[in-house]
Image (tube, rainbow, N blue to C red; front, side, top):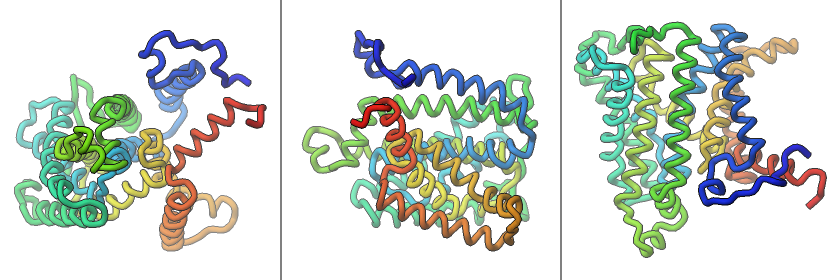
Length: 354
């Protein structure tokens, strides 16, 4: 009975179109922000931050980027981990060769480099779509993996092919503890979430969705396919480039080209399928599921007295991913985000049956 809109009147277009039009949602969001910023850092240990929260925050940024392309613009991609690699290596070389740059500027520049590469590999989308476009982006994955493994300049001529980063310093603040990394990443995620939400509500977001729903009809009403598709690739690659830089500097600390392989690309795709394509909130659900499931499969069986081997947990992980993808594609194509929306609608009508 407390989730009602009674008495909440909108007297302007701005009030009607705000992201959280219901007052209870705004109160819940404020409480949630206070909880994640003030309570969690005080009660959780380093293990939870390093193994759960930090990967979750970074992968959510990458999933939002991929969802802008696949879920909102309808352009399939099987190689977005390659753009994460571009962002990671761009940030590494910027920090190495121009050490006086602020890390926030390094992130933006790394994202722009990834966006430029994404534009190049997005050009085939102007002529092909569907499975053929997926194969073209898969080629981008293999090509970029080969470039970073063979061109030694990107790894500063390291014999092992791996690179290692130093602690991040920004405005006199050294970000090295798990809690500091968590707060920094959470702040970035909130900023990029707000940008994505406003992008999909703007004219460019409506152009992306028109191209997704029916590209021929969109072109007939005056939407330029070149502009819509390439901007989707650029923005998506920008997000993934920043996520790749954060993945390398904040999570891995040292990595080799195989750290951004095809498996990571497929995991990003699984996130938006399970979480919900065409939904920013679904990116949170999908990333949380991908991060939490392996840990649950490794820990919970031992807690209940049925320990399983690491190999069995890995096999179960793939089996569950496959089963859930088939389930959501058949039963609920809009994923966990749609189930969340249905639950909210039922709560707004409860206890009335209609």
